[in-house]
Image (cartoon, rainbow, N blue to C red; front, side, top):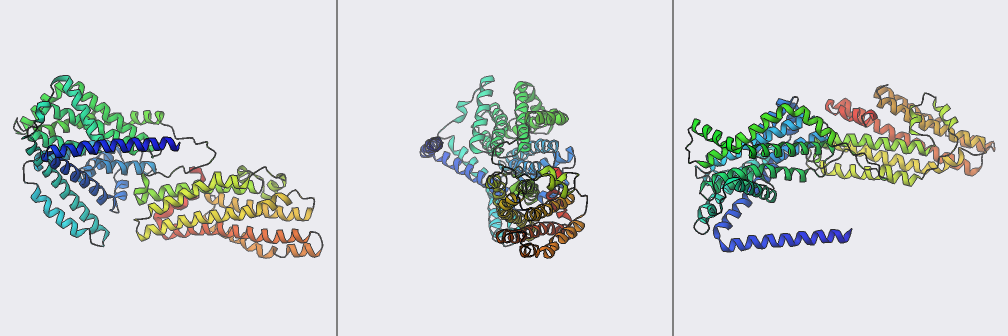
Length: 599
């Protein structure tokens, strides 16, 4: 495996070296090409800064929750947010994040994708209608200056606003340099001489659009580059149309790469995105001879000059996306059913259990990160319960048994064949580590209020880890004495097992909402207080010579450990209950963390 990884790294390094060498050679041949490349780099950096400005704003997740309650609202969200942000990638990431956290439906996610596709036409109109018609650099300079001043402010809101203005200025600056480069390149290289007509040209330039978009990781940059080349006569109108179609398909390749680490729901949305874009492009290619006359008709209707191919390309791009939406929007439910059939939730049966809900998309947004962390904590608790049950030689199903705790323990008087370390490593350790790592990353940019929520989850996870350490300490003695020939020590350890089972049952009743948190806490405190009344049992049995010194010492130590276990589990319930009472919106922590039915 290391050899394979080294080969991949060497191959990537060779490819990067060849690519950089080609770029350097072209820049040496043509100064204008260097200007174009510089403009592309500024434009791409502007897009990344724009995404940063919005991901840093608090409230965007709440806005999404409030605007995706229906398919049409979801579509509008995708349209408007892409129009404002000028980044369909960021909106797609948000949609995947919330779909992964089960905050929106797959149908709503698809509607958002439809909206983002239509929202991207704002870029073509902005570049063709404003960027190429004015001295856009004079708008770029003040935006960059004001933006830089603002993002040095300590206020998170002002800083995000500064990044936004700075990024818009960079986009304008990139457009200016790309246009300047194409204006100059025609003196040395006539790219229009490589124009291709007919079906061959349509297919070749569609492929070029796909490749360029994949390389630049941005359909927005591809379209901007195409429009600027078209505006100075360095590309034919027909070939520019083909590149626009190809850029739409290329953007799905970028989406597929971005969904590699997403959960099954995120992968469904990305597959839907691929199907939508590829099908729309295929339809457009098949009916291109009918769409171009419609584009010309719309241009005439709007009073656009027939030779203004940049604006005509913007019209075509708009029609392209509208036609796809008109076809697919009514088919959203059927597409959802198809995606559910094609992609099933992963049924992991590996030896080591890993996190079920954590994904890289949700980590970028505080609300969705909290949701998936809470779900993962419920998963961790279920695994913890299973290990505790096996450590006192009962099954997890015994917790739900209609028999009394005493009857269950009496029936289970034979030690199970278990390896505690293996159970801990396979069912707890990896999930626990992933939760802590995910939590640290997700809380990096959280507000003080949200940090308190993250810390509650972290404390809960740490308490579960401490509980299992306590269980590990008592497990050997439990198994040793539960089948002992000494009926007195056996009876005392059976009492400890009954107490542990009773604790698990009280928490289970809180989980299933059979009792409220206050009643559950009262019962757990009562069980905790009972340890004080039994602390003298080993001394009494020892004085009466019913148990040995070693037995008495083991019983005293293990009783204290079970008491500590009870205290830890009591703390977890107190954390959840207190937070739920103090903050209504954090009630979901109690419901998800305490509800095993959702797993």
